[in-house]
Length: 341
Image (cartoon, rainbow, N blue to C red):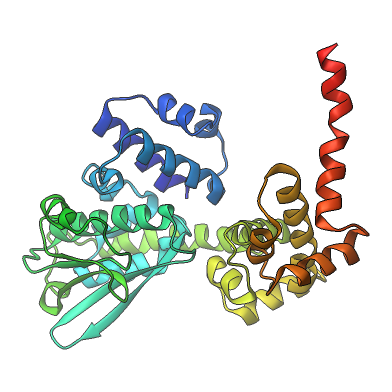
């Protein structure tokens, strides 16, 4: 995720002329994050950054940012793309190693007579972040294809709908190709002939060396994403979006449900244990820090009705949600009174 964030920051500076610090300040983030050795940023941090960029500079922001992205700058994956022999090789490399760039979603290839659709599937609900990431990525993919191979007949599909519709012409002006919204998948459609077009400077020896390096990095990533702390972080993020389930968690981690079960079993854990603990943590934090009504919180935590949530919360804490909220509110009053005297 860090590589993608750095691209967004650099492109935002090129588009607006404003400093990185200004955007981070608008997102209430610390500039020290950029110096952090951590490769992957939490999704909530990325979401705040993108929301701030769109708010500070509205008007197809992430779509414009894609025009500044350097496809060669995506770490080892960027160099691998330059060493490939055909556009099809480039896309296959992207599918194989895209998790080194970010894990917000994954891509797939779908073949139909005469054309190929290179789809991107977001792992999270249809939020502003998912929409902006989709638009940014389609712009980057178009740039990659045009740089490496002559692809005159390309079309972009977006899963999200467009409001207002008259902006279609703005999208087509920036992307320089037909654009359709409200489609089954977000993806880039291109002719099969373009996939097999030989690229200018393939380098099989360099490709083999870079692949070995990429496989090592991917192995490190697999080890990290299999830890309980990382799995908890992922599930916590999904719960805040009201989108938590075994299947959604496994998909966001890029593994099967069975593989997720094995990962947790290695640490003598299971999904139900982690979900139960986090569910209570999210419920208590939401009751304490927000004014959301009980029905909203119940839906966020996947309860079918408010009464089910109330009964569950009482069984866990000995209090109803309203009693807990009242107690937490009252517990800060003496401190505030003391500070005022």
